[in-house]
Amino acid sequence: MKVYIEERTVALAEYIIDNKATVRETAKKFGISKSTVHKDVTERLLKINPNLAENAKMILEENKAERHIRGGLATKKKYKKERKEK
Image (cartoon, rainbow, N blue to C red; front, top):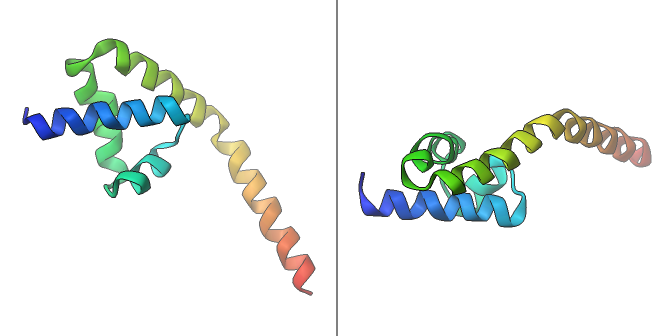
């Protein structure tokens, strides 16, 4: 694996852990695709740093479990805004 990929992978994982960031937020911050972030953190990181991979995986699983809540809040906010505009 190329060195810059390993460095990016570790940087992504550290960002996710430090900020409890989602894959989408991380991808936006680093200017790469969500699929690249996901592949780096779930597959490549296991070979580079298994302990860091486990910590990042816990954050990603927590985000996945809360995803439906964030979606509901976004919908609520959308309709509240529409009501104010009328």
